[in-house]
Amino acid sequence: MKIFAFERELPEATKELFALHAKEEARVVWELYQAGVIRELYFHAEQHTAVLVLECASTEEAGGILSGLPYVGQGLIAFDLVPLAPYSGFARLFDQD
Image (cartoon, rainbow, N blue to C red; front, side):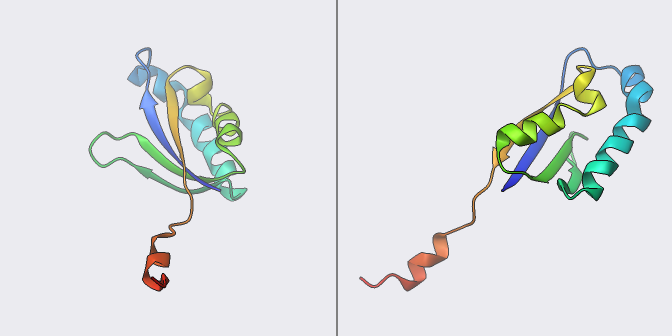
């Protein structure tokens, strides 16, 4: 299942704390990308927060995986998860009324 993960910075986050854990964060994200768990990653153009596309069995699995990120573990960020389903709207084109 595809899952969107939208990053939220938490109140305790500072630039200094982000910098302290940045290299380890990038390493873990790279490993998840190489493993095919993170399929796509972006920054929100206006807020500079991460938007990830994950491939997981459930939002619970995605949440568990994301909890292993250093920034999450340090209480700097959290994620809002949105599970996606295939679009079925085109079926209306073939309805026989």
